[in-house]
Length: 275
Image (tube, rainbow, N blue to C red; front, top):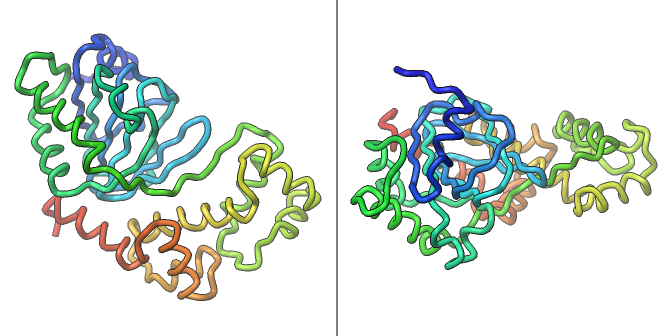
């Protein structure tokens, strides 16, 4: 197999703005922050990844894909082994026809999309216009807004504010503390509650408690898909001492009960014929 450098691959993806580009690999997190001239669809089989932009971090669970608009700076990171990452880069010819193509979104993959993703694995590299392969990929792009109307509503705000970064790190490292509060975090990081509250609103545009809830749900989603830990153990590990409270909060934020969400792992393995 010929090894291609990161720079060469990024150049190849955008070399011809009028083509689609298909790339199936075991690793997409080989790139640091970068942008594309094309819209990017990424689907991961057999693992979970995180998408990082300048403003937010997104959790991409099993049986979901992420749409990244052209020009958005980002990088992807695997937290666990992924069997294969399917990337399709679409030209922007029809991007103005639907607002879907202008915003980042993480969406569930139904059986129709899954079969189309799998069908595309026979191609690699540039797909030129006026070919059957291009027509197929263009059809795939055109149906995305139709079948993807309910994005996963979970994203964690990020910031380059140097004062707030140690605070966010402290929160993530202590999610199991069910007594965590604005006061306790302020004391641990040498901030007054008033200053800390203002920092969250000004730098992240969310309250401390909103951020804490989001961080706990994302960690719970990760554990549900990448461990055999029971739901009750996961609830306690992210700071909930009530299973019903955890389940209700999870449902309100994710749209599924923890038990339903955990089943995504099984369906992902089934699609890979691993069970």
